[in-house]
Length: 199
Ligand code: HEM
Image (cartoon, rainbow, N blue to C red; front, side, top):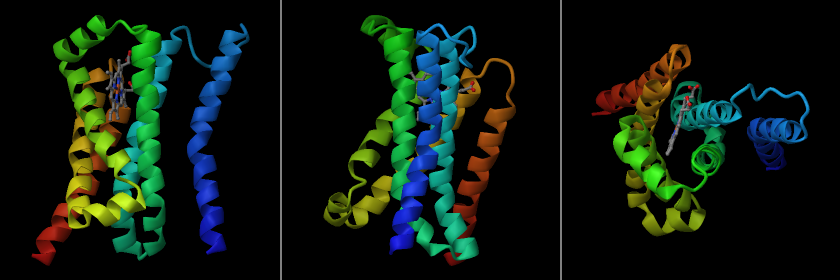
């Protein structure tokens, strides 16, 4: 029991490291000190938060295959945290867009969401993540029972929308989006194959 608590604290620390690093770089920038945010900090933050959001989505999807293949059943205790960190980084990503990029210009934001399919995909993904984040508590799991499992299957669609958004947004180097697509294909493919074998 104590080991799980320590491990959970460790996961929180590791998951918050990118955020702490980014905040530190932001602090350096605001104090005119040398930092890693490049000549275009807003774009850098888009990339940084977007990539961490996708990593946590993929990590959350990896829990079931890892449990089934290696028998690491305790991993289930970290799935909720990982899902919530995906939501956390995606919220930072959206906030960067709304606050720093568009400075609450709602008309321009709406225009971008409608006009650019890549942004539309991202927006749908984030909207679908909201009910998953809200219903991640033990109370909701109890209340929704079997419907909770059905609802949380939305994460497969969210993963697909997120990688489509990723590949469409990237300007030159498609290496990372391709890694994300490959990992998602493996994770979803594993589920499909496993379901076929069980049928
Ligand atoms: C689940 C939802 C989302 C995920 C996982 C996600 C992830 C990503 C990733 C991985 C990138 C590419 C990073 C790179 O090029 O290295 C990206 C780029 C971007 N995303 Fe998202 N995103 C999501 C939703 C959104 C939403 C809702 C918006 C705005 C309404 C948005 C706006 C952007 C913009 C503007 C860029 C491009 C930045 C640039 O190259 O200048 N994203 N996103």
